[in-house]
Length: 238
Ligand SMILES: [Zn+2]
Image (cartoon, rainbow, N blue to C red; front, side):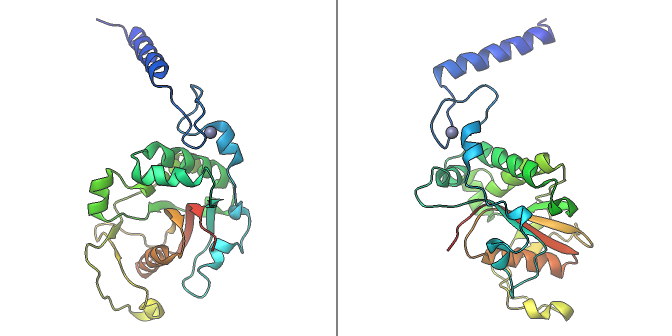
């Protein structure tokens, strides 16, 4: 029988050999990664064009929702700039089967925001992907970001609460939420779960118009969430 110690040793050796044949490279700059690095090198992580929106209440991402829907806090990790090497990270995360990019960036964002107002949140919920798209892609990129973020922030995440409806429904909103009845409802809450009284942090990869997030926020508030905050990896400034 192979001892546990030896097994670890063999696994380590295999990893080293594999790394010799196919050296792991940074998905942003192409440089070879150190053994302790995953998907993105430390240098690229340090040089990300960060927004620091988590320290700034009236930031441009938050302002996107003013007059549309109540959002408690909103942050985006970095700016989605044209010609930037960081732009392709999102593309690779979504279309090139590189879920680890989402986990690494999510974790990094988690470390950054855990000691800010974002520490008030109770639960992390990723924006659901249409089931057909998820099947094609193999995973939901927002789940990967949520997973990393959960690790970095030390807060729970769940992907079974918010569902993307397979067909668009026209829903009539009641009571104090009537004013959001025009928000196009493409999401629903799993009836076996609840968000009542919770401060939810919704996760997305990149935000442009904010329409999808607006629909998520509406659905969560209608179902009794006390507050909803938002965190995305990138923000495409218009
Ligand atoms: Zn790099």
